[in-house]
Amino acid sequence: METTDRIITVRGEEELLARAGHLFASVREEFLCAAHDPDTWSQPAAKHAVRDRMRAAGAGAFTVRKLFSAAALADEPTRAHLREVSAAGARVRISASPLPHETIIIDRRLMILAGPAAPEGRAYTVTSSPALLGGVLSLFEAAWETSSPFTSWLTADAPHLDPDSRAVLRSLASGLTDATAARRLGLSLRTYRRRVAALMTALQADSRFQAGLHAAALDLAQDP
Image (cartoon, rainbow, N blue to C red; front, side):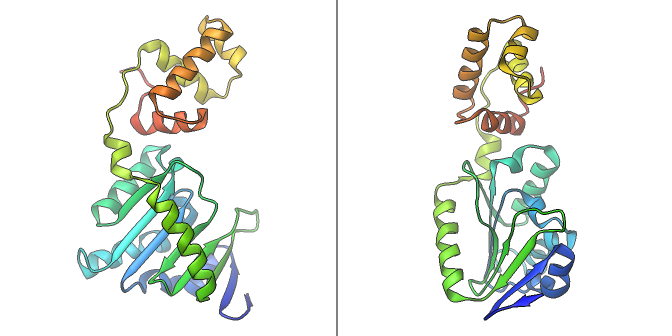
């Protein structure tokens, strides 16, 4: 473990929980979290500590805001987890843009920053530095303001997709090249790409990856 002027760096979630796990349940007024998806903080002790703290303290005892990228909607177990934390009283939003800084901020006095995934485990930086806290908090607030409520992603009216469009969606998810996908679907390359563009418009997606995430969240790829 390295310590430098109110900055502590640990390696891997086990060391994080051993040295700073108590922080997850120490929230008094506000808990903020920004992550690619809930598995950034995947240990059950970290994942459920704040939820359990909310239940023990009672609804409205303190504010919980969680911000995730659209990747959090890619599978049903993760969507179910987000429904659970929302039902417990947390405010959950989805950012259409990637989140470069994955962080937890507790009462605006402590912050945990998650480094990139690594074979030997992520590096986590724990700090109470006001300068660092202020900078990351500003980034969080800016991302929060441009994000959408989690429930709006799941309750939005789903576009009507015919069987051919659903087949195109499945081909996108399979990772096939456009030429191979078009050939398997019996379409010309131009027609296939035109249908992909139409799907992106219908799903209000800026990229094929985002279209896939939206389709997964709305369960559109499978035929009804």
